[in-house]
Amino acid sequence: MSRDQAARVSASGSSVDVREVTTRYLLYGLLPGWFVPGLADWVMHRRTHIEDTSGTKESLILPHCPKGVGGAPTLMMAEVGIPIAATLRYEVNPALLAVQLGGAAVHEATALWDVRTAVRSEREVRPVEQHIHSFLESLPFAALAALMCLHADQVTSLLRGGRGDPDAWRLVPRRPQLSRGYIAGITAAIGACVLLPYGEELLRCRRAAKRSKKSATSDEAHWRATKGR
Picture 1 (cartoon, one colour):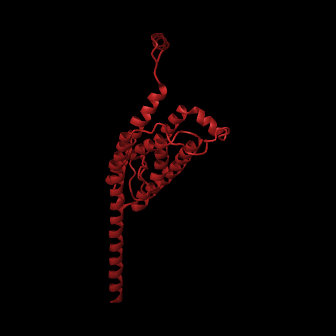
Picture 2 (tube, rainbow, N blue to C red):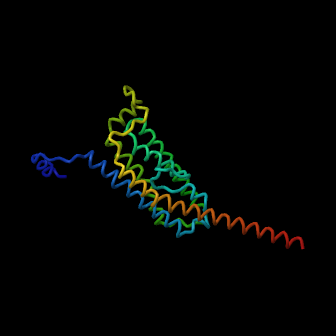
Picture 3 (cartoon, rainbow, N blue to C red):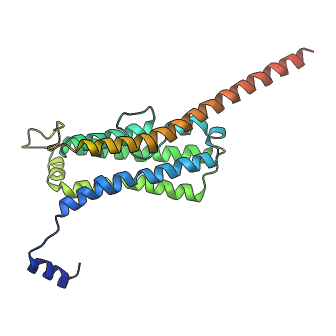
């Protein structure tokens, strides 16, 4: 906004509630939008036949995108899902910020492990998929940065070790709570865009592993039978 525009807004007495706008952006823009690169990553895994290359190992590390309502047995689900679920339920304070920062750091370390696993396997990691990964890695930091700007006082409290705040190191329920409709919508989106596709991927990888093991056993038995002759 230019100085002239700012002056006109000030003169008219209208203003923009930055906190409200940023909160709506996080809830209705960034968080739902996170599902798009997550689905795109699943499509790339399918196109490059993850079940026949890096297989179950890479699938268990993934997925990257936001999850956590309901949980699931994959590493990056917990790393991102727990902080997101906590943020939707609790007030932002030093305790919650510590959970968020810890989750972001561990998620980044796991993301590096994930890429190394994929590159060292026979699966082709195409440039498009690498670009998708850049979104999946940067979105957690974008969300956390926006949240920290909204709650600069709590960031300061965290840096001071929570001194003077008796509730600094406990999770305080959000007041008011987010609407049931919003929570239901996000939960449904997680199920449709995360749990179902990546559950299908994991199942596909396990089936391929069983077929491979069965084939190897059959080949070994045939070799022993031939050698015995």
